[in-house]
Image (cartoon, rainbow, N blue to C red):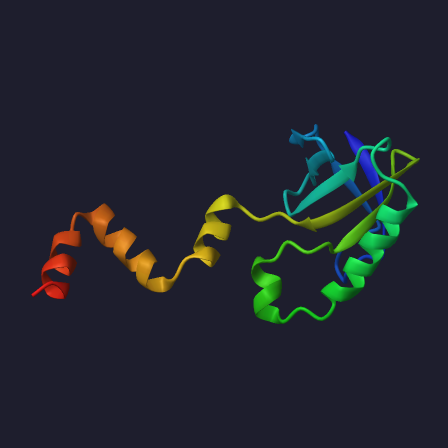
Length: 133
């Protein structure tokens, strides 16, 4: 367990978050999930980023304030920035945690969702007959 200290928080995001073990590790950094599973936290590898990354994330945070409510539903925009992990300075950001299922729902049209449901129910042949002369 680690404690992540944050700054530039959105309303409702605490100044500190407890995270579990790393969920994913990649070339750019490590992804953690908050203990309440509401947030994903990315900590950049210290040897790969510098002060310019922190400045870039700060600018991105400011731009995120202009998202519409609809955009904010599915864009996992930074909602806070990481100051430190267990007291050691780090660079990173916090986004809301979005499930793959939810992202999939946002990415396809309602018509496709209906068709997939009909296929799963075994009723796609009815749609096919209605749409083909």
